[in-house]
Image 1 (cartoon, one colour):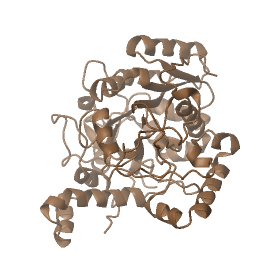
Image 2 (tube, helix red, strand yellow):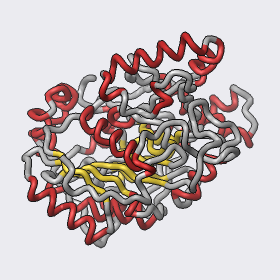
Image 3 (cartoon, one colour):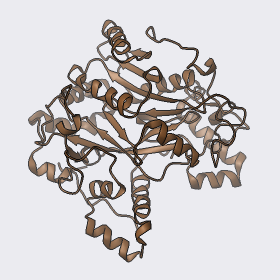
Image 4 (cartoon, one colour):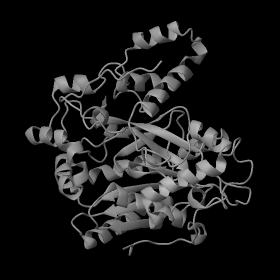
Length: 431
């Protein structure tokens, strides 16, 4: 059975001058197609469209994101972000691929920001862009970065500058993704959990030297319930795959589509490729790895990890209101999505106690005194479906689920709810 979401919305409704090319990273400079990838046997079940035996070289992990130069109030978040990915997950800054963006077309500021990131954190690869922000344009820049630097055998962690990913099993990114790869998976999804100040203040800025998790201790579902946005994010995927805008989806076949493709491989693969080609246009379509568009290559299949990682989301900090007002002009297509939130923030920069009770789980989830970790499937169900522990216990008892299988059962329940009950792009084959 699926648990329907029982919450309602709380407010009633629904040019690259600074790029440094390192030959050791560039992967030959060619398309990241399916002809080069992981050594044979690196996956117990090699996904269709994935690496082949012709591959060579060790697997690497790249981190891809974008930073806004103009959101000065949110620069204080950058240090915490590096502290997490470089310090906690042990990712190497020379493999960070960062887009630096300025709506105000501040080329001098972008160059200064790139030099600061290199000096302060060791980041070698930055791409400045001064075009008005759109999710689609940023997706294309990311696809070009992947084509330039990443080979099919690599892993890509793609996260926003306000997202801090924790994997369910803990450990470093290399440890986790090695286990994921050995299990035959090629995508790891996360769910965004909004972190909010204890008193609901959205005009609070992170401070260097203090724990950002203690400064923003509440676990909330604002993105899902106020914005009514998709909270599922593809936080890690293999280098032969590509994510769509916002990295909510990965281009490829889900389980049922993969079965259909095996029954009618030529007809179905041509249909999928035609759909992607029409959605992207010829130029952008050809930036994708060859497995997406080259005849004779198997179309990529998505074999995702069953459990969700947790992407703690630090959007609700000082500077948010200003950013949303600017986006209403520079990204008109999203103005309706954020209208209710902008109206609310124009009146006050704080979520009241009643709103926090509706939007957050204040009692069942780990508090600030508990070492930060990924939320369990049970905890994510309690947050996003407003499910009570006794409610879930009743479901488990009615289903006669043995004790040792309960966590896996709840994980599948959460996966079906979050994967199937949220509307996503449907004009192209994605998971």
